[in-house]
Length: 381
Image 1 (cartoon, rainbow, N blue to C red):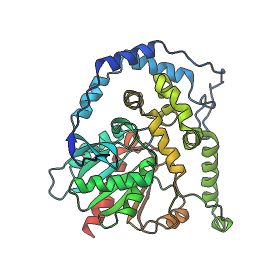
Image 2 (tube, rainbow, N blue to C red; image 1 turned 180 degrees about the vertical axis):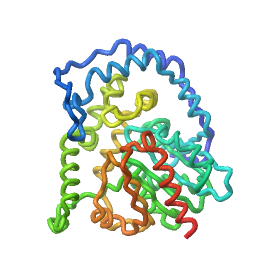
Image 3 (tube, rainbow, N blue to C red; image 1 turned 180 degrees about the horizontal axis):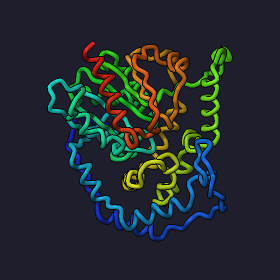
Image 4 (tube, helix red, strand yellow; image 1 turned 135 degrees about the vertical axis):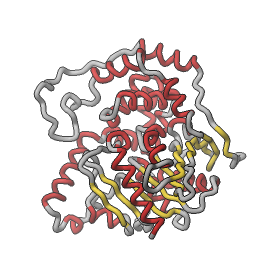
C-alpha cells in the first residue's frame, strides 16, 4: 500500500442527489410500535428520563424526523463547517479529516481536541473563536480531527482502530503540522484517546485535559475499603447507569455489525440510535450529527471503535503526563482514589455544579475557562 504524507485542503460538498435520497427515505419512514407509558407527573429519579424507559420514544423520533424533512438546513451547516480551514491526510492507511484553526496570538498553545461518540467535530464548533481569539486568557492553535471511522474521516479500512492506534495517529498528525509541543483535550471517546496520546508522546505533549476520567473499581475488595457515604452513592449511580443506559456500549463492544445494517439503511434509525446520548442537546445538534453519520455512512465504523477498544490490550501502568479534569454536574464524576491509580500526575481537578456529558453544548463558558486555566498554568510554570 502506498502511503502519502501530504496534507490536502478539504471542503464538504454533499451531492444534492444524496440529500434528495435522505428526504425520500425520511418521508417513507416506517415507525416502530411502542407501549403507552404514563409520564404525566413523573419525576426523573435516575439517568433515564420518564418515558424513555424502553429507549428513545417514537414521539421524539417522529418530531425530529419531521424537522429533518421540513425545517432543518444541511447546507447552512455545511457552510458553517466550510468557514473553517479543513484538511485530510493519510495516516497508517486511514484518511484523517481535521479542522486546523490557527490563532493570531504569538503565544498561542497548539491544542488537539478529540470528540466522542455519537458526536463529531461539530462538538467543538462553539469553542473555536473563544479559544483561538479569546478576549482574555490563554489562546490556542486548534487541531480538531474526526476520529478514524467517524464522519468525514470516512469508514475505517482495517481492524484495530482503538484508542491507542488513534493516539499514535494524532501524534503523527501533530508532527506533520510542525508542532513540537502541544496539548490534548478530549471528551467521551476523546477522553480515552487524550491520556494515551500523553502516554505515547510524552516528550511533545505538555498536558492532557479531559472531561471524564474513566477510572472504575478493578474488582479488588481492598479498593473499596474506607469509602465515604458520598463515594458509595457515586458507585451506586454508576451501576444504575450501566444497568439502564449502557445497551449501546455493550452492543457496539460485541456485535457492532449486527446493528450497522439498520443504521446504513434507515436515517430515522440512525437518528434514534445516537439520540439516546445526544437527546439532551439541542435538536439542531442532534440532527447535524445524524446527518453527518448518515451522509458519510459511518454508523458501522464508528460503532467498531467500541469493539476494537474493548478487545485491545490495555496498559497496566498509570499515565504520567500532567493531567487536568473538568467534571460537570450531570456526568460521570470519577472517584479520586481510582483516578490517581490510573493517572499519577493529576495537577488540576475541578467539579462544576452545572453542565453535562456534552459540556461544549450546555456549559461552554466553564469548559473554556478550565482549558485556559489548565494550559495557562502549564506554560507559565
